[in-house]
Length: 308
Ligand SMILES: [Zn+2]
Image (cartoon, rainbow, N blue to C red):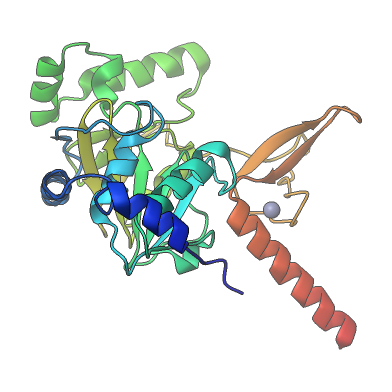
């Protein structure tokens, strides 16, 4: 079953009467695409670009949006995700804006159908393919900002691959809390040199960047930076020999892996919900499309069993 939708004629007429396809003018798109090429050529390097004003506030995904609008064409199918869901306010509004301004494109909620995926806070659970591009919205592009306020100095440190102060910061965490406490935006070394801010994805998603089949582009609109993790590239979260990187643990107090209460999945990133009436915690897949798919699979398997 397909979840694709086409933009309507009314939307087409409204948009085409006033705006260029993709809202940005062609020169702006060209500049973004050039920056993307440079970002791919130097994996992990933050390429500056002249981020344009968008009809939404900085911090709501203008960097990701400008990447999407510069790359999308009428033959493309787009999926927009916010915190793993296609139905949250940010995702719905971005998707309807792009549909309105890019007449003729397809949109979908299914990862397998999309060739462009714009996301905030999550990388889909389903492994991505070579023909797909993942665009991540980034608030703070520079992993060094926590240890060095001057951008000039940070640029020198990046150039020299000098991440000693960042490593000291991680070490201090271990001394104080017995583990590295960074839950998202985990500093990750790309292709053995530049350390990037991996955007506010959970640690769970960081290993998906390593040797990813899909091109991953990261765009920060307010900070005017684009960077990339090209396909089949090393992406290594910072760690120590004796304190390895680890992802979130979803085991309960008895050491049992918690299951998604909706689809029963035992291997996805889970969101925690509080059932206020019964005062207990429920866990559900954060990736709503993946949860739906697991549920469909489970239902069809149980139907087959009944028929058999
Ligand atoms: Zn689920």
